[in-house]
Image 1 (spheres, one colour):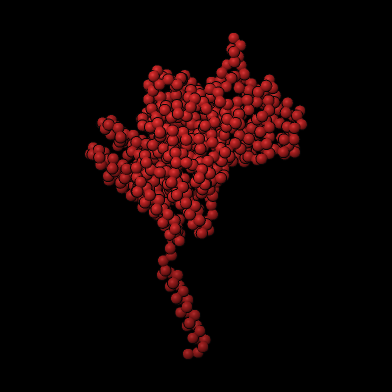
Image 2 (cartoon, helix red, strand yellow):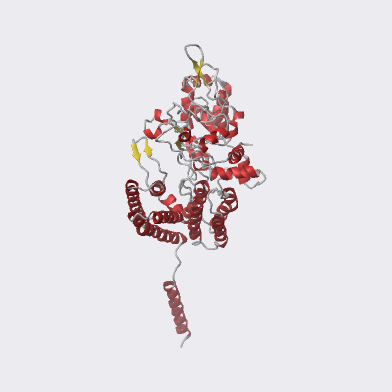
Length: 602
């Protein structure tokens, strides 16, 4: 055989071998495709539980079995919660949304709630024909929603970057919502459900190579929940700092190891944040409408100058700082401030509502107690023009400012040399920019969460755990802002109907006459509803509630401990605060107060 023939035969053999290796080998699917397949399996399991266990238990009126199958279904849902919330957010509301009506003001539509939380209320009521029929109807709606997800999911394409973003947000969701009882206030199964959510995260992480460290950390967290399953005594502070935060950090490292880029998601958190409490975890620019409203140091400086000046009021005798004192966390210490107007006898008319803190106001989706303003710019406009507050005019103020050299220089720095003249919008925006800057995140709690575990004593730690657990404060005042803007997406600022009395009287209590949101939007659900304000710097902002009725934090906690207005004899059909007693002891109340004082900025 000639050398040429040998070479030719050898080349053919190499080619055949290469082709066989290509066509006969099984290429491992991309991790994101594996994750997608895992979701399909878990979704099928959820559908099976609902169809074959939960629904028949209701039909057959097997009360114990229906509760067990309900909890089983919820735990199964928690395994895919991260995926549902990220890729199917609208459907996630139908499956596990809050049990309150959603009102679309612009469309004048009322969306009645549906899903697990509505079912929970029905299940834990005394069973009767009516509520069991309602329960069956709820399950039928869930069956349709789950089938819809399955159909649409077949068309979905997801990326590894999205998967890691969804997992990151789920860890935050467990910390801020999952372990607080937010979505199961009656069953109080938050701790085992947190374990289920972690199991879902674990199974997803396992689709990415070199995951041993992350899997071990998640297993340890799950073991912790099984070791301490009791809702009231669970140590949420330890769970967050010793388990959830390290898991989040480690998952981020796994993402980096796989060279997966961060994705710009829907959350208002910075795209690479790994803790709710890290410095600059929140991006204040994500709370504004567009890039023209982004914050800058120059806008902040101009806003501070305007905030402290009387130039905005037509009388030249009132400024923003007249009612918002820095030493009181930008509140004023009064029950209500005095109006610029006087009554027929010459007496100053008091304003309707207590002056709220402006600290952390930039991290909200609605402003004023009745949420009448959608932006801080709108808030500034309202306050300046309100005859009872500043009794001013932005048009007139602009004229005065344009004759003031100090302001002209500041406006040039903020808006450019060609924009030295003031106008109403620039004034509004500068004031809003300054208020957005009032968020140092420097409290002792922040420092503790960032690693300095000398910052809280044992009573304060106990108070945090009570706040986030037994007392259920954290299910309305969401960490890390401790206001009504729900993390981890921060899409909406909520209002609640608490039944606040006109006077601090528990024997003959009467509802405060201020109808709250109802004045502007006369839906029955909004009567006596007020925005859930931040508790940061709460020790500096007494008195409390929209009408300043309570002078101390102890009084406020006594009100909540009794079940709000319902507990002191005020009957409201639309009270959103649970009327159930919290059964907090005096020692526990003192511990919560001690914790609340750790929210003061240092």
